[in-house]
Length: 221
Image 1: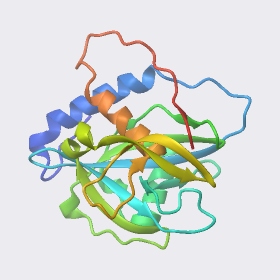
Image 2: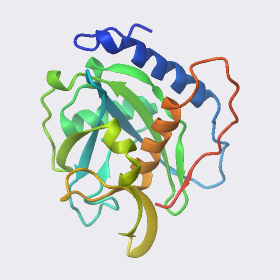
Image 3: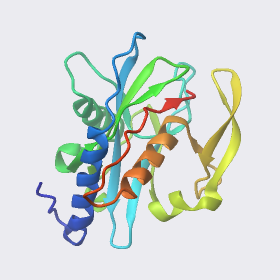
């Protein structure tokens, strides 16, 4: 895989390792066919390999009464259209929601799917690397904000909490990450679990180690 692109040449080894580890992780965790019919959706996790570390792009969804994730911190994405592959949908939805063209990005791979416990949804997540200096986001009415957070912040154990949230008129206590901006909601749910999955990929040994097959996540939303 050619991972060389302007402004990230010093990070190509890091990206190459991530792609390799993600490929191994994806190969280990196919989800069996389910009797439950689930809506297929796909999101894009977009990283900027900055000189000092990796930054991850997040959006805050606009508040809308018909959106179960109204106001939540998320990755750009949405439902698959007929005939689409997961990463095609992730690219299309990202462009529609943020104006970011992932055709110009480096594709690093796809995470194992996550399935919902209380909502009939199955989410695929595709990982891309892009230079944030080269993009000019234009948000549509589904997105209220777009921002980047560095991995050291996301991995800071002091920011990892359990907190009460409300979803679909139900209150529950969930694991979450407090983001640097106090005005933002906590990072939880599907997006939180995908971030934790990314951490697990980063912590995998580089090569030559047999891994146990992980079970697919059963998530609370």
